[in-house]
Image (tube, rainbow, N blue to C red; front, side, top):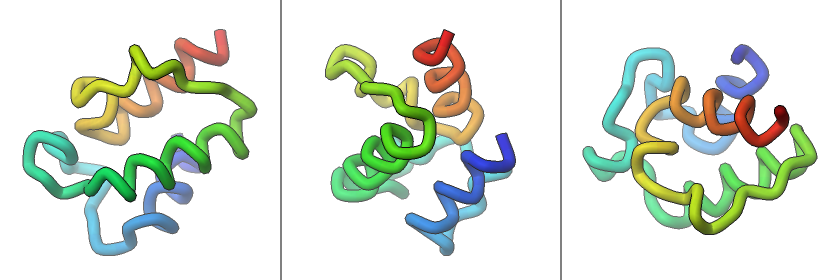
Length: 74
């Protein structure tokens, strides 16, 4: 989880990813941010995120993103 938080903070250092749980619903992350996150996750974890998984529920919080990564890695 720490590595994921580092990745997210590199992309948006103005967001408190530890506590925020409405990254998408609250319009905190932009579509460009999501593209950057997808690329960073692919680079770091060597996973391809299918289009069907790119939904708000999977990106509303760092925990949701972490759960997505774990699911795809497993």
